[in-house]
Length: 549
Image (tube, one colour):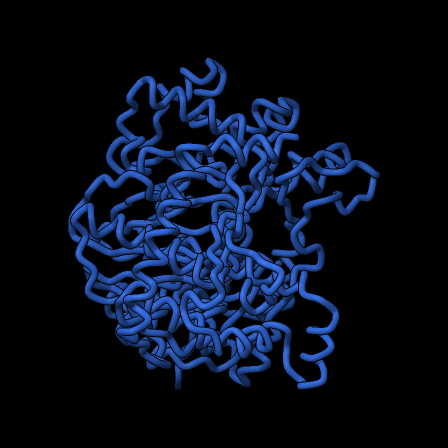
């Protein structure tokens, strides 16, 4: 009898449940549940009339539970299998997405007294509310030469876990005191399934200043505020689990509600982009994976630890045992393209409708007829700030070279190229630090649908890019971890590497650089670098001043 695992991928806008065959990684069934409340940026669902501050991005935890309660039964039905064939569950989640819960694990926003309080709601990964708190933390850590700072590229991001916790501490002490625990959303989901709080070493290491040798920097927390040092002993309690380990088993209640076998193993949660690394089949040193969706993560595996300025983190054992994983990223890629597609003139929307294609497809079709540099445009892709290598959420996007002859497809291509140039900045940063890159994989919502985009990346990077055939690599990665949590004795695998080799997704296409384009993009990239350094370093106050008006 064939065996399967469940992989659940909690993304920015929706949750996806996959039923995956553990022998070959084939997808037997699936279900996508869009979050009913989406990303909350303007007003809380309670509609009390209070508008949220700029740069807030919150979510409703009930939407996550709906993914579990509706998505799992629907996916099993779609797979047309018996639930007895399922041997494990794996979870991946956007990070850092933070949930404040009471002593029973109930999110504080479910409490009537806190339902109109933004700080009681889930803070999504792209919540940039703690800018002031992040600046305070960075200045203090830099001035005291905190040793842990080197693990994060000598930077701190507003998107990380501890800045979000400190934001609650500074802005709403009532919510902070009421919170029994602050949890990564992935760890919260695991707790809902198993009844146990098990914190993932992956999210702790990359988003919470935690190190497997030294733990949390408690003394630094005390320097921030004497009362904040207690966060570790009180609100960050819980067992720490490692990627590939079993966090626990389904509670009897969950087994009954979901129609799943009793004592079904549940894996320690993993960050979504890191899970995608497993799904594409990357498990060896010198491999880099670009996980391209609303944002892009650039994740590198290596045997050695190097402290690289401008990256988001380096953590051992966080994806593959005994290997170091390096993370860097871009805050807006798919989001940038999506934003622009909404700004196009009505005539272009009408043209797309007449052709029976999407606005995206029409823009790509028109942009594909342009040569590199033909439009005379170049852009900075910082519409949601810059994650790497500048780590500055207050930077904003720009475009240079517009004329009265500029067309939507010219601008769209310039934005595509800008994201490729941003990726080149990151990859060059890795290589200059001494990390050799032998292979580049690409996966996520963008690579399979955007032939032009991936060719631009190959040309700009001057490297071959291997595109995964699966749109669902994070969920597959989660399913892979579910099979390892089950272990060989239950029909699964005893190592992450073995599971990856068996369940990795097939290759769709390999993009090779076009030499004539490579030379043109070298010249354009030099201009991009100058804009990057001028507006991101030399005159970075200009963008901040504009946003503060």
